[in-house]
Image (cartoon, rainbow, N blue to C red; front, side):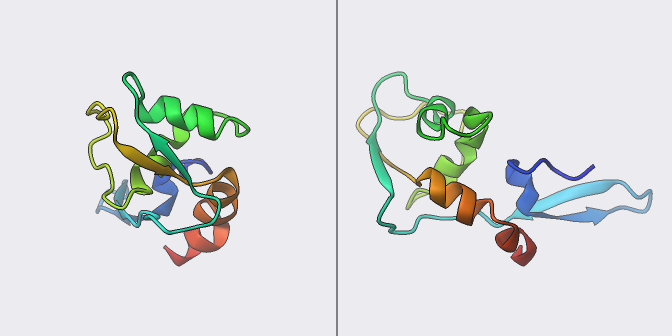
Amino acid sequence: MPPASGSRHRFTLGTRDEAGRLFLSEREPYGYRELADTRRHTVVQGDTLWGLAGTYFAPLPRACGFWWVIADFQPDPIVDPTLALEPGRALFVPSVRVLTDVILSEQRRRAA
């Protein structure tokens, strides 16, 4: 079964072993870009990537699941999402338009 449309693993290449089992390889993250509609969020105590994704991507179904987009979209990407976000840190958040039309686009997936 292929990864779901909103999955970060949709952009990975798969390799199969001798038994035919599929293993996901590294994916190409969509890194930071200066865009006109990028938002800047200053982290406050209690913020999480999941909560921020739920807030900023609220129009989308299962918005919290797009936490990986915020983690990848930093000038210095967040590689361990289990660590607490440091209050005062500036995070850059792409717009819903960039998420749906660029980051999750079928054309980008094919290029990966």
